[in-house]
Image 1 (spheres, rainbow, N blue to C red):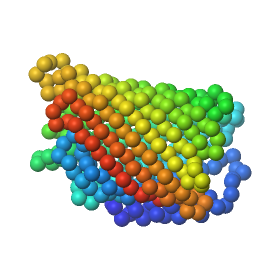
Image 2 (tube, rainbow, N blue to C red; image 1 turned 30 degrees about the vertical axis):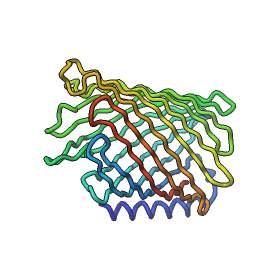
Image 3 (tube, rainbow, N blue to C red; image 1 turned 45 degrees about the vertical axis):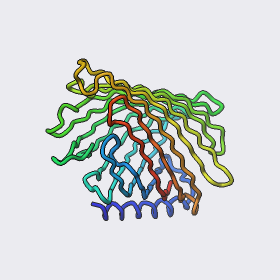
Image 4 (cartoon, rainbow, N blue to C red; image 1 turned 120 degrees about the vertical axis):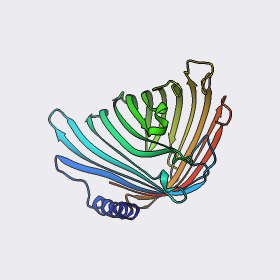
Length: 301
C-alpha cells in the first residue's frame, strides 16, 4: 500500500504542475486539485497515555470538477484522500476518504459532504488496542457580505464504532461551527470561528460537551506565505454517577500552529510547519503536550 500510494502522489504532483502551465480553460467546466506530501516528526503519537515518539509520511490528494450551469450557479463535486504511514508503529497507519458537492453563486456556497475511516487505531494496548471506524456527514453554508467579509455556519454528525473490546466508547458526535473570515486581498486573511461539539457515548462514560474558539491569520511577507493558528477549548464530561471514571472531569486545551512556505516553480510550493498542543485535565494522568514538526511539498491546480 505504501509504495503504490506514494507513486500515485508523485504522479499527481507532476501532472498538476504540467497541466497548470497550459493556462485557463474557456470551457463551461474546469477541474482543480492539489497533492501534498508531508514528512512529519511527532513526539507523542497517542496523547493522554504513554508517550510514543514517531516519524511518518502523510499524503493529501484532492480533486474536483466545476461546471457552470444556468442561473450563475457553479456545481463542484470533489473527492479527497488523506493517508498516514508511520515508521515505528505501522498499526497507526490509516486512510481517510471524503467527498461532497459544492453549489456556488458568487461568494456564496453550500457544501454537503461525507467521509469515512476504517480500522483507525485510537490507542495501543497489549491486546491490540482500541480501533474504530468513523462515518461522518455534514453541510456548510457560506455567505459573502461584500468587502471581503464571509460568514459561515456548518453542522456535522459523526458515528464512532469501536472494536469489540471497547464497545463502551461507541458514540455519536454532533458539531456546530460558526465563523467569520475577512479577506484583505493579496492572500491576506483573518478568520475567527467557534465550535460546539456534543458527544454521546453508549454508556455515558465518554459523553462530553466541547467548546473551542479558533483564530487564523494568513499574511504573505516578501514573497513567502505565512500562516498562524491559535485555538483554546474547554471539554466537560457528562457522566451520571460519582464513581464513573470521568465524573466531573474537565479538560482545558490549547493549540498553536504555524507554517511558512515559498514557491519553487509556478503552482509548486515547499513549506515547513509546526504545531504545539497541550491539555490540562482534572483527571490524573490525562494531561499531555504534543509537538509536531515537518516539511511539505504541495502542487495546486
